[in-house]
Each structure stands twice: as structure tokens, then as C-alpha cells.
Length: 431
Image 1 (tube, helix red, strand yellow):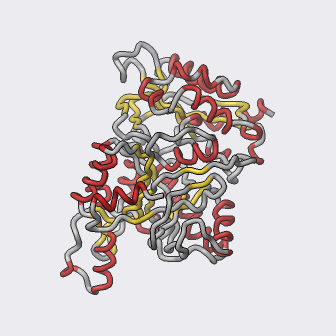
Image 2 (cartoon, rainbow, N blue to C red):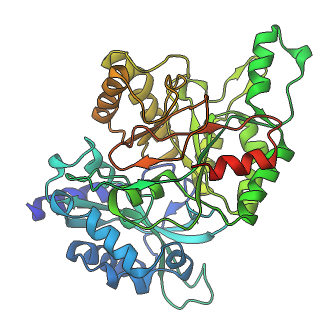
Image 3 (cartoon, helix red, strand yellow):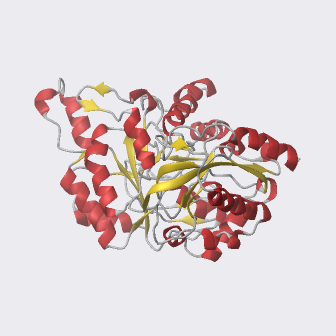
């Protein structure tokens, strides 16, 4: 079984690296030093043997510091890659020189001249893994190594991007989910920029809608600065899933930052603040609005979405156009609005899409409430390869709560124009 899997993986890794991701402009370099491949092979062999502690010394110091500890990393990976998800084989492709890499947990941590190596792993029982198709996502991962050319202080290659062992590697839902809860505020932004000009709108309704979604740059900058000065650490959604499903400890004051719809001004005004403050974030564009100008609003282009990944940010799904409430729809409609949308985004970014921001306001006063329509939707999305969903909770206040047994009901609250820092602080600490 393992030999067959290895042969298939070798065939998969014999092709050019998947476009997109962190280094779309890099070119294959067959003459790259053999030591880069040797480090990669040893790193993956340790995964096969479950010897995660042996991987720690070859991680770059910046990558080590992203984990709570060596022991916590080993425990998480042992929990994730067990049973049907046990790694039984791997393959290593051709090194790629001159790649750019950025940490998904801190966009200030970057390597400008890394060596990228496409890798693939195979599992003990790929067909038994959940969500469907997740094993295939591990056939197109990438290790990033910093070597003497990119890190003069180092005389050998060190791993900066851990590929299948990374925190941001695709989520595998365990066969038995251990009950865990977290209390992580998940913030939701839309338009970040100057307030709209009423004279440019044909109706009061469309103007009021955009105005209500706008957070001016000064307010956004102040809120992000508050997170840093008050000790909050921005985490990715994958990082939150790593705790809930595999037990990886969270930082003392975690927060998640999300952006809906894919407005172009998120790139212009929000991104520089996030980069300067070292705050990671997840962007939820609508695949049908990429590069579109709709009324007075412009949306992110495919090039801009791809560059978000290069800078260390995540791109996940907000449906085709955020125009249809998802619950209660047929599977064919859900496939069209979400599954097909995810494939479009994956083709642009070169990275998996496993999370969705629902279209439609959450119809209940508390995030943990759900009816038959929502239950049906959760099942439909699971069959399409998603692992979790984020709500738009626009009514009331509630205690922040995420559960390993309810990844489909992660609550968020909108940021509104004119919100004071005191109100922002109260929101973060409520519950």
C-alpha cells in the first residue's frame, strides 16, 4: 500500500509546482544544492515515523517562535496525523530558487530568497478522511527553506514553511472529536476607507448600505493599534482549528480578523496597517465579484488576491456574490454558490479553501442557535470539502465561544463606523 502511494506521489511531484501560492514568479532550478532536498526528505521521513521532535532543530528560529513550544507542536501533529491520517509515504519535487515566503501567523516574518520544494504525502487510509477530498490537498503542499543565500547567519538550510506540518496545513477532521471550547473574538470588516460620497449614489438606500459598512482608516488603524498595545495576538482560522481539533494551545489573548466581500479598499487601506502591526487576517472575497466595479465599489483583482497569499494572509470563500441566503437551498444551488466559488479562488491563489463566511445574516439572537435549514447547510458544505463556517451576527451582544463540536457556528460581529475604542474594547472582552 505504501509503495503504491509513494509511486503515485512521485509522479505527482515530478510536475511543475502548482501556480499561485507564495511564489508564482519563481522558476524551477534543477541545480539547487542537494542539501535542500536532503533536509526536506529527512523532515518528511520524520513525519512518517512520527518523530516530530526531530524536526524541531531544523526549523528556523522565527518558525520555532511561532509555536507555543516544541512539546506542544509534537503533541498537535501526533494528534492530527494518527489513525487513518497516519502518514505512510512522501515524495519530494524539484527545488525552486528565489521564492518568497511569509508567515501566515505574522506577516512581518518574511524570507525574500527561500528555496521552495513541492512535496506530497500519503495517508494510511485516504478514503476514510474527512472532509471528502482532503487527502488530495496534501498532494500539493510546499516546504520553504532558508539557506545561506537567504540567511547569511545560517550555514545550512532551515525550514521556514513547514508544508504538511504547518499550522495552516489543511484541516483534517478527527474521527473522534474531543470536546474543546475557545473564547476568541472574531472581528468582521467590510469597507475600510473614506466615507462614501452621497452625490455619487442613485439612491439613499445604496448610500446608507455602504456607509454602514465603512470603517474610516483612522478608526481602523486605532483599533489595530489597540490590539497590539493591549496584548492581543491575531491568529488565523487554521490556528483556531488547530486548538479545537488537535489541542494546540492558543496564545494568551487571541483575536481573529476577517474581511468580507473582497472590496478593493481593504487592500489599499487595511493591508498596510496589518503588515506594519504584524497582524494576520482572513479575506473572504466573492468569486463572482473579482475585479468588478459595482456601483461605486471596486473589488479586488485576481492578482491582488494572489498577492495576499504571498504576504502571508489567507483567502477563503464568501460565496459567488453574497446575494443568496444559503440555508434551505438545494445541494445543486449550494454547489453553484459555494463549491464552484471555492474552486475559482483555489485556482487564483493556489491554496485550499476550507472555510466559508455565510451569505445572509444569522437569523438567531445567539450564535449557537441553529434550525433545520442551518443543519442541512452544514451537511451540504461538509460534503463539498468545507470544515467550518462563520456567521454574521448583527444583533445583540454575546459571550465569544467557539466549539470543536460546532465548527459551523463561529460567531463574528461587524465593525461599525464611529465606534469608540471603549466600545471596541468592551466587545473584545465581553463574556
